[in-house]
Length: 211
Image (cartoon, rainbow, N blue to C red; front, side):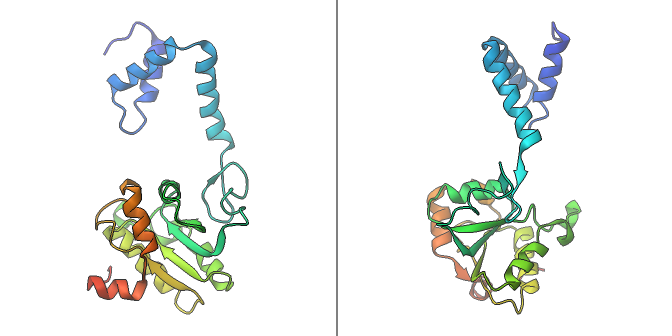
């Protein structure tokens, strides 16, 4: 596609780097920005700039944060003895939207996936093990997406937590196998959290263990 302006072409090219954005959508977004008042476009660019330069990761749970400790971990009304283990900040947002969970989180930053070159050492697993060893955590909810990689990660971490004074539970199968947690509707996700199972019963119920 030919453009009348090199600046326009460069802006479109940057938008196409976003997931799910093709060239036509990128052009529509770029032209939309051009139609806005200069102040609105500058606020947009400033928000993106600050997002990239100033955002932090919570030192306690590894979630996205504006400060060293996120607002969830810093909230004295949250139950810090119940930790919900998730793959990414997107899952924290999904679970928080249900309004049923009052504990805290631990964000792994991914799941074990040898085919994608992701091993346990690349995830925030060791810090979780250290938390569990303190005795301050009563329950860890394995809230990873019910895929083969997710189940493999849960199995690996549960073995690493052997002997730790903590109860390990997992989401009930309200979220279908092979589904991504972030795409589950709020009602299904809320039910899966409140009806969570002891990990041992989950293994028996599904008659299999991840490899």
